[in-house]
Structures are given as structure tokens and as C-alpha cells.
Image (cartoon, rainbow, N blue to C red; front, top):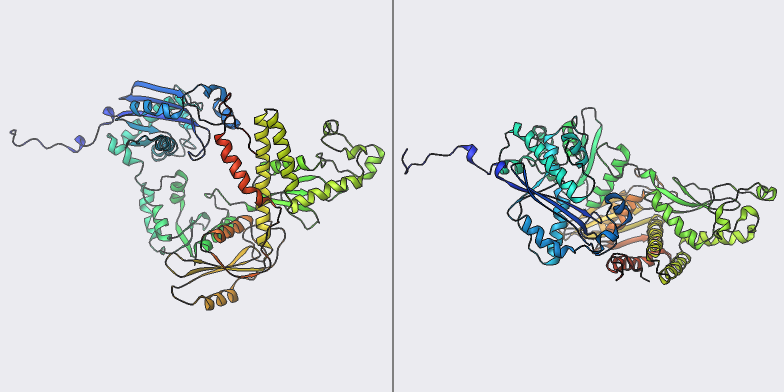
Length: 593
């Protein structure tokens, strides 16, 4: 062959051989999960090519704000460690130079790259168009569930027996990720992956099982609604919603679906059942009801609405605040529903600061007190309890505390706010800023719990509410809500008069009976009330721009002195606290009033 006729290359010559690719494996430690409200505390990066380490970069970073205690417990990075560290604006140029012209690798790259991109945007640096490889995606495509139970870095490090074990410090985790990457590349050789281009496309390629089951989406309509994946025995594996069912279901059978559990679910699925809905709100509500009804194994959220907790003012001679899992028609006052026991404990602590109710769990009676058989606790000696168990506080005097607590639970948040602000002011004057911030957080927890309960109570009291919202393509979306439950939904075509549609929808809407306390009825109940999550979906829909109230039966109000009035103040305080730092101890937030 002459020079004028060069030899044609083979397919093996295409792409960049992995042995010639320079990878920069990066890991970050941060103060939280999102770059919107968290910052970087440490960067670790290792540069490798052909299995040889070329260099590393590691530095602590001053986040410019407080490090949450649970982050310190997880990473070991304390406020004192980052006080003298550089800010991220000083670190970025060095990192960008270190990674210039390389391929970025990270374990869960969306997290690390997201923080780095946000930092560059904030400080005016242009983000280079780095090729990115995610070891999580590679592991999901390369390893089976029989080999590793999950794709956490610790699990993969044990599987590949890496010399360095991850410990939630940036450089150690980056070095462990290097060894995991090399182990995965070795496994990928059996799949014929030998170039960078093949490596990047491999994680995005659909599995053979996904390709084989694409036919399950053939009959799915292009409409808003809910879809249910079922196995051969009719068990519901997963429930989801979408504004376009066909497009969403088809995505499960393409390379865009990289979630391990979703791919595993597709392998078990034998059919897809759909429920077409009139509006997006109806689809969201039906999804919640179906998840609560079937409790699919591949759904993570909303499976157990009956597990909500409440703060109860008990009915007994000397009432106390108790955390319970159900509401009864027993004459007690309930605050909630609350999303977790921790939130209930924080709300109870805030209420105890305002009202000196007893905090012991024993059942007190006048007979026990008269006979001196009631147990005492240390709170009485500390002046934190009136000690009715010892007879120091008469039943009549304790009744005043009970009445005050009942007023707070029923909607008057002023005593809790006054007590919290007084305590915050005193702690701030004593320069005890961390304790003051803790009191602020307790007040915020109470505000969230009380405000949620008041919003749900207001909606659950209404026998009927009819509302309309402009539809995306013209016309209107209609909803009929009865006692907090979505009873009917429909759409009005463009340029059609809405009144006949409203009348028809009201006439055919589901009959709903008044239930117990709002949110206490499990989602999916068909005769009374609605679950808390369903009512919150309805409230979010009602809060969207353009919504109009067509008809309302009853008074839709919240307490004048309720917790809703605190929301703007607390949002402002929490936002300012992230930026306010002590000059002497950078990172410790100054409580705001």
C-alpha cells in the first residue's frame, strides 16, 4: 500500500484507550445535602493514569457558617478545624488547575459535581466541560445484587478489598474510589470496554432486561395519570404518577433509567396498569392512595401514612404531653399530625418551655399523692416542675397550666413564642450563642408542627370547597374537596362556559363524611376524611398562582394568633443565621430576634 492509500484503521483504534486517560478522582465533605443551603468543608482529589498515581490535592475549606453537629459526628471535621482554612473561592483555582484536561470521577458524581459547579457560579469561575464518570452508575451496571447488597462506597471498598477504607474524609474516600474505579474497569474488560467513550456510554446503556420488556409500554396512553408495575402474580411492585404516562413509562426501558432498584423492579415486572386522571392533582392524590393501599416494595415514601405521630394533652387529673400514634375521640387535645417522633419531641420541648406541665410518665391520682406514694423526679428540685406529685401544686393551680397548654394546641402560639424569645435573649446576652440557636430551632420545630396542624384542620372542617385553576392548554382544571378529601376532578375545555361543568362535577362527586382529627384517617379511606399527605397536596394546589375559589361551604380560616404568623419571622431568622458569624469564632451563628 502506497502513501497515497493509507491503511484503514480497525474499530479498536477508535476512541481513547483507558490506559491513556488521566482521571482525577474527587470527593467532597459538606455541611449538608444541597448546594442551595450547604457549603463545602473539605476537598480531596487524586490524579491517576494507567493505574499510577500522579499526584493528589487535599484541603479543608471554611464553609463560612456553622457545621451541624451531626456532620461533625459523621466526618470528624469540627468548627475549630476549619477556622483557619481557606474559603472555597481561594481553593477553586487550584482545583481547576489540578483537574485541567482530565476526566472527573466521583462516587455519586451528581452530588460532588453539583457542589463544585455551584461554587464556581457563585465566585465567577467558568465551569470547564469536564467529562464525568460516576462509579455508582458503573457499579450498578457491572455488579449484581448477589455480589454486593448496595452500591455505597463502603460496600464497594470491602468488595474490592481496597487498601484504603473510606471514613467520610475527602482524601481517604477519594483514594478508596480510585481503587473501586480500577476494580470496575477490570470487570468491564469482560464486556469489551476498553476506551473512555465506551466506559462513559456503558453506564447509560439499557440492560438486556430493559430492552426485552419495552413492549410493556406499548399500550400506555399519552395522558396524565398513575401507573402501576405488577409482577406475574399481580403484586403491585411500584406506583408512580406523570403528566404523560406513555413518556414516563417508556423511560424505564431506556438507558436514562440508571437507578438500581428501578432496573431490578423492571426485571420482575410483567405488566403495567394505568389509571388516566383528569388533572395533575388527581394523579398526585391517586398515587398517594394506591401507595398506601398496596404498600409496593419498590416505593420508599408515603407507604405508611398511619404511622404519623401526634402530641396529645392527656385526660387525667394532672394532664401531661404524650406522643401517640393515633387520635381518639376521648376529649383530649391533639397537636399534629407530625412527620416524625423527633419533630414531636422538639415541639413538646418548646411547649414545656412555655407551660410548666409535668414531664414524668406516671399516672397521678389524688389518692397516690395523699398517701405519699407518687414518685418524684429531679425536675422538681431544679424548679422545672411544680411537683404536683408531692402536693406542692394544687389541682386548681395545675388546671391553669392545662388550660394554657390547651389554648396553645388549639391555636394560640403566643405563649410559646414569648417563652422562646425570652430564653433566646437571655442566652444571647450571656454569649451562649449555640444554646440560643438550639432554642430557635425548637421554636421552629413547634411552628412547623402547629402550622401544619392548623392548615389541615382548617381544610378538614370544610364540608365542600370547589376551586378552579387555569389549565396549561387553556380552559380550567376543576377540583371538589370535601372535608379535606379530593372528591372529584375534571377539566373545562377552552372557551367553554365553566358553570355547567362545575354543576355536573358537584353532582357526581364522591360522598365524604366528616372524620376525626385531620390527617388521622389513613390515606385510602373511602367514607371519611383524608390523610395528611393528601390534604397537603390539595393545599399546595390551592396555593398555586391563578387558583380561584368557585364555591365554599363553611369558614376557611386559621387562628389569628396561630403558628402561621411565625413563618415569615422564622424563615428570615434561619436565613440570616446561616450568614451571621461571630468575628472571634467564625462559623458560629448569632441568634436573631
